[in-house]
Image (cartoon, rainbow, N blue to C red; front, side, top):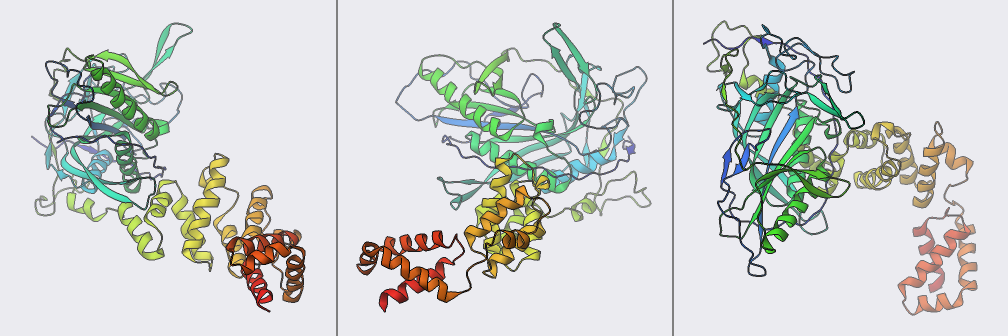
Amino acid sequence: MAAPMLRGCCLRRCWAFACIDSGSCHGRGAATGFTSSGKRGQSFVAQQPLLTAQKSRKGEHKWAAVVGLEIHAQIASNSKLFSGSQVHFAAPPNSLVSFFDASLPGTLPVLNRRCVEAAVMTGLALNCHINKKSLFDRKHYFYADLPAGYQITQQRLPIAVNGSLAYSVCVGKKWRQVITKTVRIKQIQLEQDSGKSLHDELRSQTLIDLNRAGVGLLEVVLEPDMSCGEEAATAVRELQLILQALGTSQANMAEGQLRVDANISVHHPGEPLGVRTEVKNLNSARFLARAIDYEIQRQINELENGCEILNETRSFDYKLGCTVPMRDKEGKQDYRFMPEPNLPPLLLYDTASLPAGADPQQVINIDRIREQLPELPSETREKLIQQYGILPEHSFALLNEVGLLEFFQNVIKETRAEPKKVTSWVLNIFLGFLKQRNLAVNESPVTPSVLAELLNLLDRKVISSAAAKQVFEELWRSKGKTPSQIVSERKLELMQDEEALERVCHAMMEGHPQVVMDMKRGNPRAINKLIGLVRKVTHNRADPTVIKEILEKQLSS
């Protein structure tokens, strides 16, 4: 059977951010006992359910938690997986629907080349084996937002299998204690997204928007190698950064471009895995961590109180901070998987197996895509540490905020300040102002050039650190002014007249004899108090280092 015809599509690259929370992890035993199943209504990563629930054994043993994830990433493509309809977030309802998307009789799927290339590139970046032959299947289930009554997916033979994702978590409260963990990737498969059901409670009706129907998805199935919400959230953030670096998905969770289903169970170490629950459609890394940690504790409480854990699907109510039941899964749903009759096997090639005279537009070369892989986040972080001598936790922070790394590097190019000083200002002061005002990096009124100029003034000792912070605050309020203009207008330059500064220091020592006595006794706080008094009198225009030198000189004379 011939390979399916490929339809070309343009590539768009976008960046999104990720950040890292902290949390507590529950220890667990070996990650085994997960079997394959479906996606909607039944988890693809599902534990084999026990015939009887675990009995209460309060206080006898610790509990171990097991967490597996299914991650659905919307492919960054201008058109859908099997039709030419455009993909655009927040378009008017049902304005991006082709005849095929609406499942009108006689319409046939045409595979989007861009989506296949995105799947291959993602698989390579995640250390997967790329199957040169993969198959499409129909997965039957009936929802109003799925017009065909089935989803085209890859149940039997997906495009990529047996990969791994490395992510870093902190031990304790400081990011300097970083350990790297790895979660196995069971498979990556191409599939269609469904439409949206919009529930109108006032009119007691449901409206259907098919704009999303048929959009290409990458389903990344992670093995149950995690044990708490922090690990799961951190792994998802790392995957998010990888997808964005590759350009295969914008992975904006707020826009539904990255959605996560979590499968969770608890058991006593050394015993069989417990009955699992699935928490569906988590679209925030923070909510993912909270939902998993809540569900782990809920299951422990239920079992210790002698109750049973139901094999069910739950959702997370972020307002209440808890998971709530959606539907039970005791009766296994039959999806009636069957080969997709309108799509032949998807055949991929490497350089060695590429047919002679093959049309490049109809053939995908795995080796060529491998050569096009960009620098991945882990490599970027390592380069930042080596090039600028920054701490590992700072490299994570620079990558986790959209646009922050580019901002940092542009400041570095235009300033003479040390990289560590630039890092401190960008992460502590600049990013702090953004967070307070709920702004993105590209919305900041302070540009890299402006911050570089301010740091140059500080590096040349034209102004003090305290004055630099005053200038920075003024830059947010006075758009268009330069740091030099603000320093001049507010007379924030450091005192250059050393004799005048000596007179001020002498006056402070005479006015505070007790503090001087404490200095002579070797009290380190005493000199800091005098430095503070001198800086107050000089309106923070005196360099603390120079003040200390003058005070020590006058004390010894």
